Length: 470
Image 1 (cartoon, helix red, strand yellow):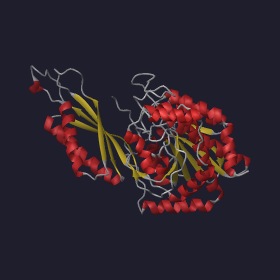
Image 2: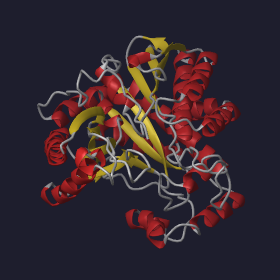
Image 3: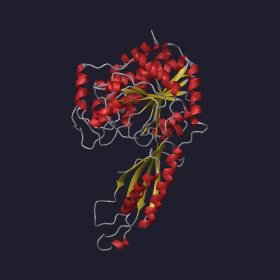
């Protein structure tokens, strides 16, 4: 039996168990660093499958590593399981229908992501045992991808130092190899402290922290013209100081995401924004505290591993759908804007007139960058890392939407999740059987770094991510 068939058979035997895990995590819908139920469920499942589990790694309560096997190579499979706030939605519904107004939802499909990675780790584990092969497979339970950059903290703590290569995937609306870079990102809170006063009787005695926040935001908006066009700067006022207009607000906070293609570029923009914050404090007679929360590096694509993954993806094929699934996808697409619907088709013309992706995008090595951020970037700086995208949503469906939440608890999402596990496991085993691939991948990583050593973008004094108050 071909190794791909063997791995697929293992995952199919675990199908119902894996779907149940994914659906439970979907129901928990826990946001970053609060994924206690999700992490416990994944740890329990790993232990049931014969993995030794270490919890609370990297000084993070919801981070863990499940290990099986001995010796080299050490294969890391990255799993995420955090949800997003404000995206509550009934599963399998083709209309917007929140379970709880303002509640959480898996709008990026991380219930599928974490479980698909689990499927891959389990398949690799049984393949190693059944074939009496030396090697170690590790499932990395990585919290806080959406906000807080859990992997960056885990990399900084040395948890990937002995890993040989890493595999990951993401639910998407197309099937593809991820061969793009991403934007580095800093997450920073600016906390202004002033002096309260009666806004009518004695406003001259007050010093408004809210004025400082507003002035800072205006200053940053003027800055946008004078930074590189690839950069992104966005913010949310997380504390406006109260709801009483007749009180001068003594406290106000704003949370910034600062992104650019390279960490060095992000650092430069960050320092300029800090100067603007200090200027706003001077203008208003307030004080500003700059609270660095987290950061993530840009991705270094590894074309060597990507070619192996692509070949295995082509050999395994793509998920197949029945009429009911196609009708559901059509109904979801009817809720999308015309711009959304055209997005995937502009990338792959073969998707024209289709509601679900049934082809694999052509493999184009290192094809630009994603204007978003993932902490997989930090892993990719220290070990060769490869990712695939597998269709789990209808064509054109944008991430971070209720449509993704809805589809994430359907057979469409389940099929994509299990398929991703098969593709990643097959890639891992091919590399295991051909050590020259790994040597080439490691040499490519050194070349990609271009003489630059990885330095964590999170300062050492930031010991762990602090949840931002809203």
